[in-house]
Amino acid sequence: MYHLAILVTGGAGYIGSHTCVELLNSGYEVIVFDNLINSSEKALERVEEITNKKLKFYKGDLLFKDQIEEVFKNENIEAVIHFAGLKAVGESVEKPLLYYKNNIIGTINLCEVMSFYGVKNMIFSSSATVYGEPKIMPIKEDFPLSVKNPYGRTKLMIEEIFTDLHASDKEWNVILLRYFNPIGAHESGKIGDNPKDIPNNLVPYITQVAVGKLECVSVFGNDYDTPDGTGVRDYIHVVDLAIGHVKALDKLKDKGVFIYNLGTGIGYSVLDLINTFSKVCGKHINYKIAPRRPGDAAICYSDPTKANEELDWKCTKDLLKMCEDAWKWQSNNPDGYID
Image (cartoon, rainbow, N blue to C red):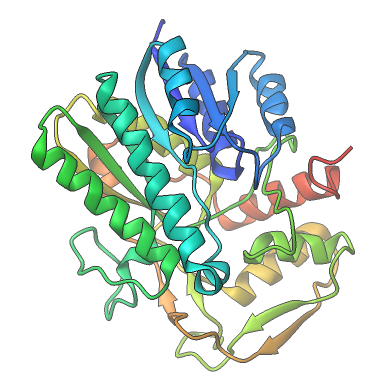
């Protein structure tokens, strides 16, 4: 089976590297473009080890158009999966201009180069943050959109840019994938979530407490209207999420703009996650209750029916498997990709 190449921006990152594995295993040629600010080239070496296949890597930044053009000049690209972007909510509140510049201008540069080279197939890594705080659950794709922070706003703006692009030029085919909460790691234990500083997300924080790198997990709020008072989220195994991108490539042959939630449709509380992880690693995970964070919803989980039906995609891995794989990655690599 021969495919043209898929360009994966941000392909050395957490979700990007797992998606590269699934693309290579599905017979695609993979070109990665990444500035390595929040990622490691080691992840790409591990991807090649896992799949026993080669990919091509260009170190570059979407803020520099000539660096993007070099890729399109040299490669016969069929579609782009666009992960590259800054993604820490708290940092986006402190440094909004950095987020607008990096995420929005980088995407515009990418689209201009794609247009010039006649490559108009795009899968964009969006986020459930675009739904704000919906009043009812589960969340469907046609719910009203609202965002609470600059990070979420960049995701929504980019969705709108792609929608306008298609309206102006029907040759553009765009799939917007709204992720819920990706956790876990590849079952080989070779690639996983590798935050460069103190983790922003719950699971790498838990895993680093489990290996003794951090002391204690903060649980933000235990007085929500949920079964145990802690926030409920839709955690999805990163490999299930990665497979969703491969399925989305097949959908690009239907012309238009399509939006899909990628989640399990099941909500687990923060304490469910901590207790399951504790079981898996055989250690008590220290946690303390901290005040609620502004903008955190009590409950947030998806209705994935549309993706199940239209992409022929379904999550297969449960919370236990997510925790087992995250622990295997972290215990095999206590310092991430650092030797």
